[in-house]
Length: 551
Image 1 (cartoon, rainbow, N blue to C red):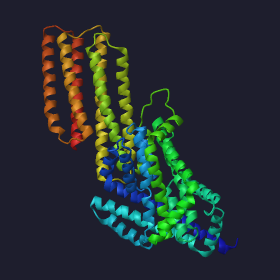
Image 2 (image 1 turned 120 degrees about the horizontal axis):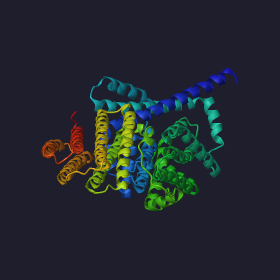
Image 3 (image 1 turned 60 degrees about the vertical axis):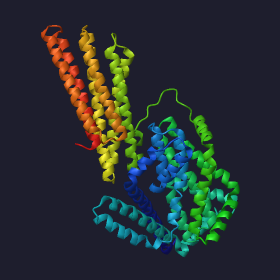
Image 4 (image 1 turned 45 degrees about the horizontal axis):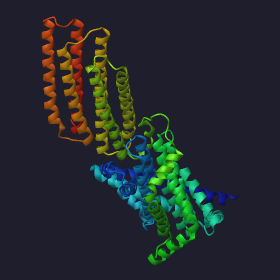
């Protein structure tokens, strides 16, 4: 190889690699900018997912259209299923929609504004750097990403346009030309492997369009590559499901089966399908980039329409492939630390769902504690469950802290920052509430182990105070779940009544002490139990303050 050819290949490699890097970074910036602008709407969309397959599919389409990545959407779905916040049927619906939503990328790339990518990038960058308004800055960030996408696409295309390079690349693709079924299979395989390597169907689609723009590959070869990239993009969700729950694995396998089956059944009619696309392109006078986008879109829309009525069957198939485990699984948040960083606006909703679970754990702990306090003989099983719940609360609080620390370290909006800080505080307060409930239980056990019993009046007072504090905490937990900003006034008034009640009970107890109706040890334990309930009330009030944004 002479030095001229070597320099030529080096220039092409630099152009293609540099263009691909700019393209991928542009996709990331565009996604993050859109998420920051539409974060609250995205969270509402995810929260609105129901078992209605069409609605779930619509949510998947809209979310993916905004964040511009089916891989991110499917990983997110695997995460929600893993955390127990989404059912398998809901997940399958969203995944089907994600495959439609990702086709928007092809139409964006097909726009004839490639040469304007650099000025778009430059103007938007100035806006991003010098404008103070956050919404405008993140909108500019998304436009910067769009400019980088087009500039990267132009750079890749330019790398393939050199005649000598074009000759070499054309010769390479001639062995997998999409004019025969064998050639289509070779193209699909190449597209699949390329997408698995870069873990982005948008990147493979961008390379395919860049090759087509340079005239290096024809339409049939591009269509064959698209078949493969739809299979290759499933690798991201599969990797996300490793180590996750059974249902999360099932969601990932549903994505794989959907894309593989969709590719296989389309193969026998491939040339008829591409002929229809070509005919439509002729009518619209569309260029090859638009025809590639239409091919990608049509493929996914047809498959989604076919699979929508078969979602139940698909769920049954993946359930047989991944059977239930013999033991009960506990959903965790830590599996998703890294995977959710690409969707901070949605990741913050997942941690909120985990906090909602802490609310439920707290309510159950109150029920268990009351059962122990009201029984003549403490049920050992309930006691163990109570202590186990407190350990779960410790783990969940640790997971939320680690998870949010990763989320908050990214390039995120103030909306997400505020939500994350509020969640960190709320999680800490709930963990403290669980600690004080265990303190009450330990104090009561100390009383029992010393062969001492509370007076009838003392037991009634403790149970009454317990019920008031439990109802108070439940009221605030409902506000946490519904994000009710009007809870604080009611929390203050009810909290003062609980404090007054606790003081009344303490005064009555001191009177019993003066009358020598209780021993010194019983007196200390009783007062400590009262103080523990007061602390529980104080932490619940702190949660109410966090809900409304008070420090």
